[in-house]
Length: 380
Image (cartoon, rainbow, N blue to C red; front, top):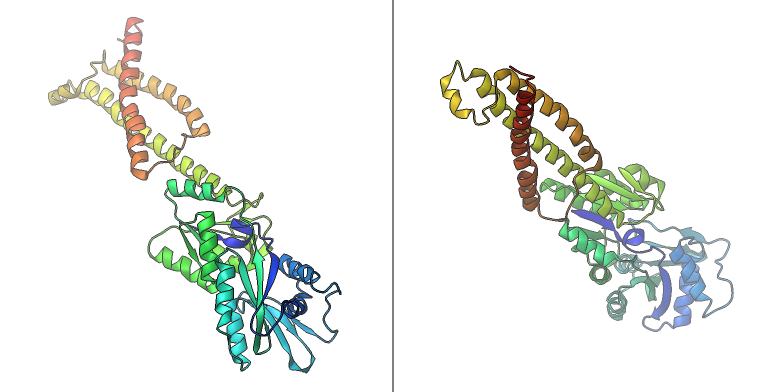
């Protein structure tokens, strides 16, 4: 199975604020002002887009007081904001995280909030709830854009027998909407770094091989735990150091190429091994009966190739071996072509082409070499 972080991996990762939705007695302008204060020191693309959207309602540059203390976003708290003089705290973040914050401040979450959050989430946008201390003020709608051709790529992964799971910190409604748009098989919503790590460990405990793709610092523990880890080149240094590979193009669809190359290597190795074993079995049928048929009469029944003599049998087998090994080098270098199919179909194809071919070719080759040497009187 393949786990993919949503932001920056499945989506472009440059979420932008598109609207402010007030709750209760608050007005749009008030939600914009509070959002601007909470985002004044937020250097992320999301934070900058919020400040820019605030200018639509108030062109005055959005600046917090000099004595303000900014609270950066954390993957564990899932919110950020600013603390102002007098103990006033303004926060923006995930709906459940803000709900806990409001209740810890002695406030209550208005019933209207869930409807607003749901309406934003069902459209595939991310709702950020804004709170002024114990009071919920409104919701910021953040929209992200899927990377091109994601649905087709996930369909291709599915045909290859890989199950795709999107991991995101978004609420379940937003996650479900984006998962449907992207075409992934499943999703894990409101995922903290610990939740990602536990999910991978659970799947591995069930005997599954897990591949993980991510780009953020909060993805690093999961990338380190996964059997195969691929980090985006545009991601953080922590993610790149934890991963086995780094995608220089930051394109999650490259995972398909990684899987196809890996499968091609396995198929090539399996094909050459199958041919080698079958080839050795066929050569034994050529050499052993010819050598011992005189002393062990029952081996005569196995002498189906009827070679000229024991000397001819050995020389023919040695010459054939010297010819076939160099002939397999281009196959090993180029690789056996991988076709999307089930494991059973690939096994049948491998046995039919390389197994049967490994048996028939030595019989034909050794017999022809024996006839040539006999015709040229090279053996007695």
